[in-house]
Length: 155
Ligand SMILES: [Zn+2]
Image 1: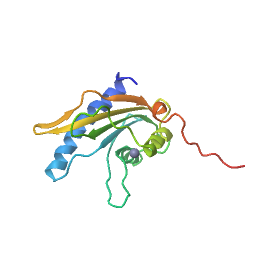
Image 2 (image 1 turned 30 degrees about the vertical axis):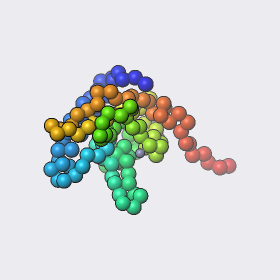
Image 3 (image 1 turned 30 degrees about the horizontal axis):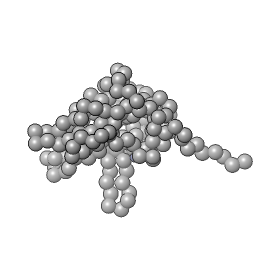
Image 4 (image 1 turned 135 degrees about the horizontal axis):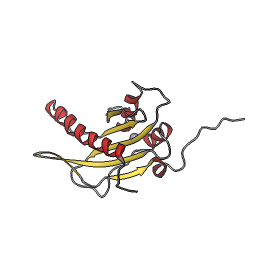
C-alpha cells in the first residue's frame, strides 16, 4: 500500500473531491443525505462518476459499479479501468477507509488490469461543509483481489 499518486491518480483524486462537494451540495439542497461516491478513470482518459444506488428490496448497487456502468454508456466493453477513487461518508475519522466489496472487486478486476489502482477515502459532514480525511489508502486491484474468479469451460 502506498499513498503516492501518479499524475492520473492525482487528477482523479482532485476531480473526486471537487465532485463530492458539488454532488453533496446538490443532494443537500434537495433534502438528501451524504452517500458513497466512486469515480473511474478509463484508458480513454475520461472520468465517470457513480453514487451508491440504495434500494429497499435488496437491489442496491455500489457506487463503484454505477461508475463503471456510466463508463459503458460512452465506451465499449474493451475499455480498461486505470484507477478508481471511492469516498465514504463517516461520522468521524475511521481507522481506515472502506474498500470495495467482493462484487465490485471482481468487476474492477474484469474491466481493469492487475495494476489498476483503487484509492479509498473518507469525508465528514461539518456545519461549514464537508471535510476530507487526509489519509487515503491506495491499493492495486491485485492486492484487493489476488485470486480472481475465472470462468472455466467444462470439457
Ligand atoms: Zn461493491
